[in-house]
Length: 342
Image (tube, rainbow, N blue to C red; front, side, top):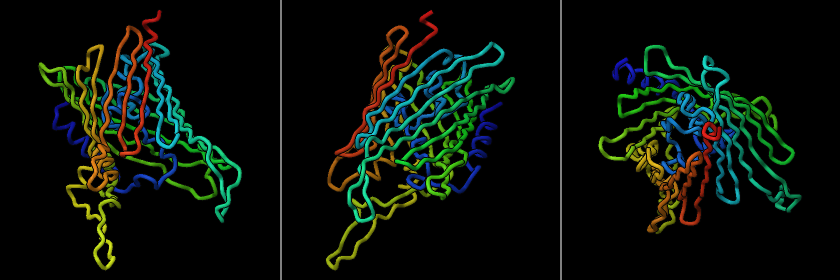
């Protein structure tokens, strides 16, 4: 299959849905938070990490025998005392069955202060989200195309309220080992709620994204890029820091143009020495940068960086993400190659 046919397939997936919701409008939003230090360091939404056992959480089409019998434990010290983590593992039951991937994701909001309608404090309460998924990928015969899918059980608890649901991901990947590039398209979080918090059914954070990577010739540098939220092109939100007030007290909101909104769909990253024992990584999330920037202040929001160190059967990854001048997050990942322990 040539590149022209692949581009056509990607085009069809891109416009699979013209409706969708973004950010703060759906239930189970934690599904769109990266738990992998490597992915987070590269911008947070990279989709073509082919030999990373964490990647199938975001892109099931990359499931292959290269991640077989590998285990990953991830932890993020997130914002405002929130803790995020995940556990990923891949294995095959037999040679014919292929490789299966399983994962557990969790988000712990910690202890929250309860209050009544008048603002009087009541008893404290806890809140948490959990997702358990199983994924599989299949190589289309006589081609370099791979299709994959995840199915995921979801549960969320807020004090004495709870919600459950189910979601699935579908992905298509083109990976020719004789070419320096990889292309993928992913539709994530298709599903529904089984049980609602208070009788009001909410939508899941469905999203469509195209991702790719390119390995430079004669230079140990690999580029990554993702165009996300294709199900809803206008994702712009005016930044309150960019509004202006005239002498009469009239407030003018930020006017987000077409170019500005277009760049908010873009996440880019670069990995230096990707095949070496020590890797250096840098990423930039355009949307995060524009929505969290401050006037007359350099916050470096949207930037992330990290490194990876491989030690025989173990690999340690770290990522630092800048959200705001007063907020950042650190992500830690430990990958264990159980095959080498035998």
